[in-house]
Structure formats: structure tokens, C-alpha cells
Length: 375
Image 1 (spheres, helix red, strand yellow):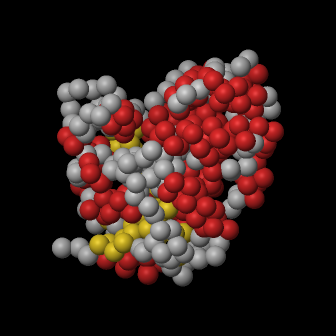
Image 2 (cartoon, one colour):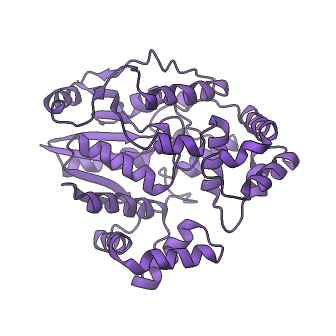
């Protein structure tokens, strides 16, 4: 039996995700699929369009066996931090193979780039040089890699894949790596019913029908009040003008730009555009605004550095049997209900804030693990 791990966001779950899972089931017929997912706040600094309950149910309905939660303090972060916690959790659950979608599907190339970033002493110096010239961190990474290898990687899934591979290599995890080529580049493709989650989110913002692109009714997507979200962020910025510099990811001097942008902005897009620069990516600004919204400070980032548990959000009967077979082997406790862990108390805080702008309210303390009986 193979134990397959997937790192995901499912914001929202779409037919490309279903395709990936179906391909795993074809290639690894006798397998358990374990998914670790961000829940309410994603790695790109966005609010999830699916609640953690719906996200879990949809994953189980589409042949995932175990769904575990990536805590907020690791999900709303850079690719490397996001990957580090995700791969650690999957390794704890004894996966033997990591599967991810890839634009290039070139494992040799991706592994070469990951190895360069780990082992080449010149790499970090080159990254610093490019950042000193005003480039943002992802661009600096890409430029340094190209200088050393002549390889240019710009697609989002390949970039995340490199972070996953770095974690596996650095920690010497006994995990095989198995990319699955994306059927197309998704973005802007009008010829298929498989498009990117980004495109689906854009269509929803434009009030377009997306039922063609998701394997469930769009009524299961959550309704979020983005105007209220913006106003709460703006209030936090204006009310805590002298404390913005304490927020995680706010570099010295950026607090002044954020404050001025808040004064002149009338909506979230205007706020982001007013802060954006060559040095700060759209995703990083989004993550900063989420940190302002949740009051996630630099002190918090230092405090919450270690994983404390493995939280099961849902599982099939096969998944439950597998968990029972390995639970004595994990170094982290496996939990299925709310318990008094600092990380989980923080999860409660950020969930309560999400509830302020969410049509569907999440009862974090009384959340029950979803068990799906197999036919």
C-alpha cells in the first residue's frame, strides 16, 4: 500500500484538483491519500472561499482519505515556511510519496534547482545582491537560480514544488517525489473546464457562473463581505498607526506607506495597489494585510515556530484505519477535537475574526471530525 501526500489550498477545489486525485488513484491503485491544507487563510494571503468544513467534505467526496489542517501561523506565510510545516506534517503521518501538480513536470530540473538553493554557498549571496537592488524575494531567488544554472522557473506550482523538494532533501525525509503534469497552464484558457483557482476567484468577483469549473454546486462556496474586511483592516491601520511596524512581515519604513495608503484608499484593491512596488509582491502585501487583520505580530511569529499537533479535519473509514495503525509512531499528538494548545488557541482567534466577515460561521471549539463511510 502507498501513502500519498498532497499539499493544497483548495481555494476553491476545482476540476484540476479532481484530475490530480483521479490520476493518483490510477497510478497508485492501493493507496491512502493524505491532504494537508490551509483552511481559512491561504498562502497567497487570501481568504478561503470554502469553510474548513466544506473544504474537508469536498476533499473526502473526491477520494481523499485523510484531511489535516495546516495551522494559520504557517499557512499565511512565504512558500518556504508554508512548505516546511506542510511536509513535516505529512512526514509525521508516514507518507511514502509526495505528489504535486507541475507545469514543467521535470523532476530532474526541479531537484537540481532545489539542491542549488540548499548547497551552493554563492546562491544566498546572489539573492542578497538582487534584493539590495530593490527586487522582491521571489524575483531575487529566480534571478540567482538563472545565474547559477541557466534555468528559469516562473510558474507558481513549480516554484512551490522546489520548496517542497528542499524540505525533503534538507531533512532527509524518506519521501519519494512524484510530479503530475498539469493538463494546461489553466490561466486564461477558454477551451477547457479546467482553469486555475485564481481564474475561478476572478470570475466570482465578476459575478460569472463557475459551476462548469467545480465538481459541486457553487452554493457551497462561502459568501464573504470584502467591504467589511477592508474597513476592518483600514480601522486597524488608522487606530494603531504607531504599532503597524510590530506586525509580522512589515519591514522598516513600510508602515508609513501602509498608513498613507489606508488614508487615501476606498477599497481593498486600491489599498493593495497603493502599497505594491517592485520590492513587495501582491502576495506579500496580501499576507501583511491578513496579519494586520488578525493582529499577527513579529513577536507572535517568534512565539509560534513549532508544530504542536496533527489536527484531523476529516477522514474516510480507510483513513481512520490507517491513522489508528500509525498513531503510536508519530512524534506529534494526533488530535480530533479542540484542545488547549497555544497554536490551536491562535486558530480560534483568527477563526472568530473570519466569522465577522463570513456568511457561514465556524464553531471552532465544537468542530467535529468528518467521517465519510465508503460505499
